[in-house]
Length: 272
Image (cartoon, rainbow, N blue to C red; front, side, top):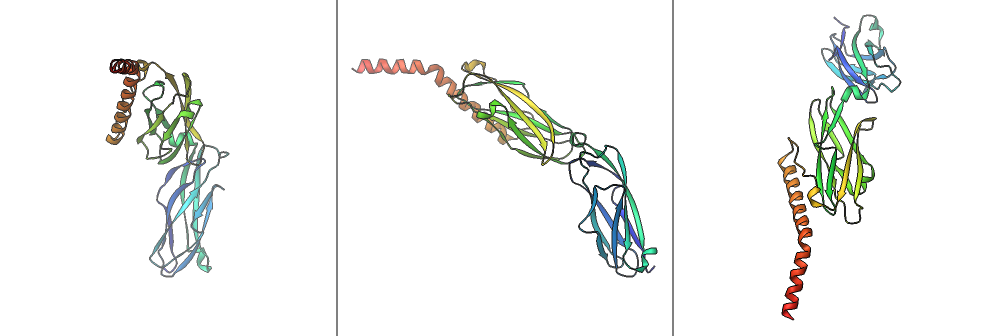
């Protein structure tokens, strides 16, 4: 065969997430005996493209790999689309040297693609004032593909709290622990504050959020005892223990400072 070409998607069917760049591998084989330049054409949608180029040169008995890129916007209906890709030589042999393949793309919204979940052991945490606590938050990707999630903290508790880390990359079915670090100082008024953790797909829409209440108290015995979440690394556990132990020392000193001052006063009077 002087002129022959074969084009093939590596998948027959795949999901395409709205608001994200979706890539699908394609292989083009030059089964002929002559070096050819092929033009790649798509049909079935106006939100797909070819990368790196729509013109590809392939030597005889060789193959080239490239990608079909799909960028369905928010206006695209959530249904299945048959996307055709055709490879045609740019010379006079195009009548015989052409081939096409089809991939079925199931367009889904971001929630349907990633379905993330945020979990905490409590909905409300009580924190002793002028201390610090580390609240574990579990993120799970229940979706069908790997995702980069960004996390944003809002609410009036943000004035004494922060999230770490702020970006998490998760494979489907995997989970990771992030932390809300709350450290109210003595200038923070007693009372209940709200903290909202918002989770977005990176450079994309909001997927889910979780609201927590954080009560600042001057009663040490009311403070929530935070237990590390299952699956937390040893390093994280050690961090929690260190913070907890540090807080216990601060609470003890606070409870007994008047006794210490009285004892010191007695010693001074005796010496005088």
